[in-house]
Amino acid sequence: MLELKNIHKTYNPGTVRELCLFEDFSLAIEEESFVSVVGSNGSGKTSMLNIICGSIGVEKGKILIDGSDITYTKEHIRNKRIGRIYQNPALGSCANLTVLQNLCLFDAKNKRMNLTPYTDKKRIDTYKDMLSQLGLGLENMLSKRCGSLSGGQRQALALIMATMTDIDFLILDEHTAALDPKTSDVIMHLTEKLVRERKLTTIMVTHNLRYAVEYGDRLLMMHSGEIVLDAAGSAKGELSIDKLLGLFNEISIECGN
Amino acid sequence: MDILQAFINSVPSSIEQGLIYGILALGIYITYSILDFPDLSVDGTFPLGGVVSTAMLLRGINPIICLLGAMLAGALAGLATGLINVKLKVRDLFSGVIVMTGLYSINLRISDGNSLLTIPRNAVTLFRNNALADFLPAGTSSLIISLVIALFIKLLLDAFFSTRFGLLLRATGDNEQVVTSLARDKGNVKIWGLVIANSLVALSGGILCQQQRLFEASMGTGTLVLGLASVIIGTTLFRSANRDYSTLAVLIGAIIYKLCYTLAIVLGLKPGDMKLVTALLFLGILGIESLKKGGNKKHVRA
Image 1 (tube, rainbow over the protein chains, first blue to last red):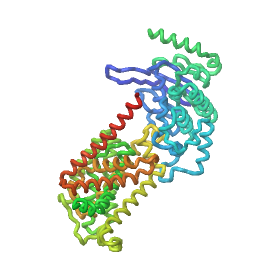
Image 2: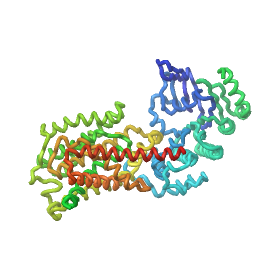
Image 3: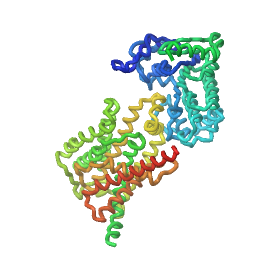
Image 4: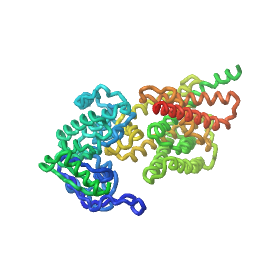
């Protein structure tokens, strides 16, 4: 169980650009649930992910994982149990290292980063198996530099690598937004498969309402730092893209847009 | 013809110097090319290695232990730069300048205030008065010893880059986000990189002082530019598809740099002019590189 309790977050405090985003924001996410999050720009979706991962701090409030307080735990320490995929496919792997070298790095995530050779010949077949299920031909590109892969290939690789070690949480930050529709579908299928197989607690921020409706077992809509819609189970099943879009428009009108 | 003859005569000693400076260039390769950190502290750690090694040698200590002492001193200086940059969040360039400036005084302290230290001809160094130097044919022994040391360091570095930690170091310069995703503190990795790089730079300074039997307090001026020039010459000329073998390119780059240096001296330039020559050479290389890149961009846009 992941809990955000009474979170307060203000950007640029004490300046003219002061922006209070979260005021007493709370959210609880059950273990092994797959939550999709939608909302307009500036609604606080990515900030929420950053707060969960520890990329930014909070003024007040607590972040708990299974009851233990991680509010002041550093980002890289939290990442032992978290895998995160960004909108920009370039952030998930090292451009100047080969596909194999990137795989070796992530394979060693929860091992010691010491002076043992990074390539383990026995693991190469496992890597190839993992890559071949993508159907993108990556298994034949182990010695290619990641920088020369396409965005879709890189994002698929990032997803495979983020989930190859023992993690509990998968954080997806608009991870299909930079991809073409067909590749997005491929990546979403892969995401669903990995999440179910590995029983990961997943939070997916997306602008694609269809994905938000089709995938996941709970849907959140955010607006200016608040959750305006929280539908799980059968309530989520009754949601349609049109209904979501209607709600979206209502909020926009309230804002005077 | 005289000029040509003079140049040919000085080729072996230029190669020898190039190999010694090559170790320095390998250190700078780690900070500049791999970590993307312009580490100016090398202008202080190069003479630091020189003075530590020379001062120990003058007390009759085994020359190899003197070099280990130099490396340890360099490592500590690198640690200082890293801590200033990572923990105090001082900009990379300034962290280096602070350490470089401080080291100038520290180096003079170690040399008892002497801006020159000379090693007597009969002292035991890596290059003289030891079993290996006596065994090798006179005239080429220094060259062979430099070659062996430089290749040894190159192979050691290659081995390091094939380890998990070596790969993590490369990842840090490439994409810091990945290091954080790997649940590692990117600052700590950066500090380790600076420690390793500066210990190599100090080693190079120590070897150079043993070779020329002389330490000068001013020997560090322009170290970074010299090392960068070597790295850029080497990696530009030998741009192989596989970046994993750049260590050899860097060594060769240092040798080419030293050969150019000798040629300029033979052609009549004074040693004092050489910093300007290095600076202009460096400017030329960087200028050509950025013009090339600029040209590519235009091409892409069109």
